[in-house]
Every structure is written in C-alpha cells, then in structure tokens.
Amino acid sequence: MLSCDVSDDTDFPRAAALAKSTKRPLLLAFIGTDWSISSLKLDREVFDQAEFADNSKYNFLLCKLHFYQTQERSPEIIRQNEDLATKYKVQDFPTVVVLSPDGREIGRLGYIPGGVKAFGAAVNAVIARSNQ
Image 1 (cartoon, rainbow, N blue to C red):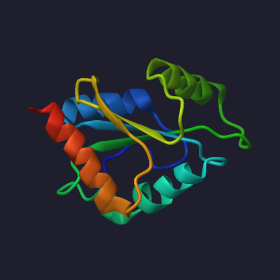
Image 2 (image 1 turned 30 degrees about the vertical axis):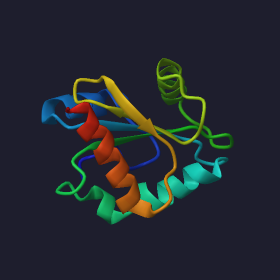
Image 3 (image 1 turned 90 degrees about the vertical axis):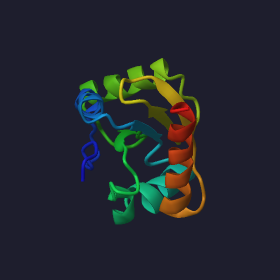
Image 4 (image 1 turned 135 degrees about the vertical axis):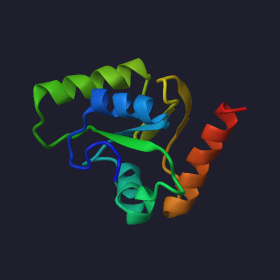
C-alpha cells in the first residue's frame, strides 16, 4: 500500500514528496487518536480497512498525524504535527485536509458515516471539484 507509514508515526516530508512524484493527492488526517471518538471511528471504519488501500478506486495517499493525550511521542513528531496543525488551522478532530499533488489545499473533510465507500466518494468529489 502506498501511503504514509501505517504505523503510528508519520513522515510528512516523505509523503509530500511521494504525492508530488506520483502526482497523487495527499490526505493529511489530523486524528485525536486516544480521546476523539469520531477520530477513532474514522481510523477504524475507513483508514484501517483493506478496501481503502485499493489504488484503482482511491488514487490518493494518506498521511496520518496523530495527536495523543496519553502516549509519549518523539519531540520531532510532536513538533511536526503541531506545526502542520497550525499551518492548516486545524481546530476540530478529526480533520482531513486534502492537498493537491503540488501541496495546495483543495478541501477538507471530517468524519463521514458510511465507511470506506462514503469517505472515498467524498474525497473523490473534492478532488474532482479541484480539477475543474
């Protein structure tokens, strides 16, 4: 699966470079991992599903940015995630910022009930609007 690291830590610079080189949109998922119910639901119902990794249906990359209240993180990751949250003015969790392959913000989404199909359709709609 071509996505950001599916472990808990994410490498934004690598994901951004990959999005640019493969000309694919990048989803920056700001997730309140251990305190936001809708973040947990988005992660479990969408991002953790094998179907979401189907590049023929969903031709975009995912970069998860975790915000924990209880788990220790490396200072570098905490700084990266907080800097990105500030840059994109993220106030609600979850927020998924959709970036064009060249790094422009083209839309944003939150939790959408309905699993992979509903979320994927919403992302594809954002991408389609930006291509017009």
